[in-house]
Image 1 (cartoon, rainbow, N blue to C red):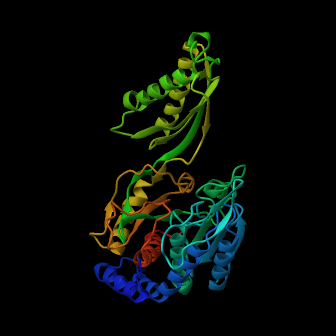
Image 2 (image 1 turned 180 degrees about the vertical axis):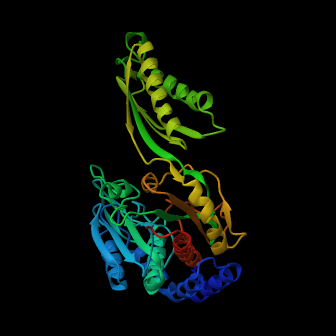
Length: 437
């Protein structure tokens, strides 16, 4: 597939501009600056895509970002949560502090696209050699935020507040045995000094290129993993009464766990999913094994439901096993919390998204079962997270390769929409907020 050329992207910008009605005094300047910086945004995106790095190892990426922001006049701090970059630009007038976030890491995926700048990188991940690819589209996020950073720098004297840019490592998770991501950045004080009033972020997604999809309240699910280790007593397969069969116990547990969602969760208010992804045990057809192991995930959109599912899982697994003469141990890998868009902030900023994308290109979307650690920022300050469509115009979004696929491709016509969305969200918020006294 051939990518759209930059001149074509300029036509896209012009089309979006005609549909937009500026709400802040600098909106027209943002339109102009987005057009000017677009070739560089495309260049950044392609460079990051061709040279991806995994979580907590984004050394080259961080170096480029830090150098660019320093040249633009930002106060830059590196090494945050291992490889993160945080940059602050104080405007010429008093006002709120607005944070914008982009994640930096790629995935251990071998790219199968035909892009001229496709990744051929390989590296070590948790002891294995893997291909590396920006299969989730974080290359776009970084390029978009650098484009916004450029616009803010050129308008510094007119900004009624302070911009804080957060380039975050390890959104996809750090290597085994390490901490990382948004949770670690928050622990290290990324939302303080100066204290952030509101935070915005976006994620590319296989919607139509240039569409913006958002939702008030819960948007993306929490994502927890779990392991259930079941112990029986080994015996000959011809004499099952001579032992305790953990495979049968595990089968009963798998079926019983599904009743948590179907009978205990009010799915009309808070949908949830409990999935067993692996059932491991045994090595011969005529031996009842000593142990089996179940692996799975829980997805929820309410923190109370999330905790109740874990409690009920514990009861079901241990008591079913005990009733059959065996035992079970449940352990959890606690993942990201629910991504919850602040309702008041979302209502306030929804007109901005409609103005930028066009009234027919911005819409409220459904709940999404994927998880995002942007949720850690939202637990501390009001935040709004939204999706930016990147499916090429000649493809059906329903058939396009999903994020994390080796065939995932992001159409660059969406890049200017992303730049304008982040810059206008920040400016609309700033101009609409009373300065601190």
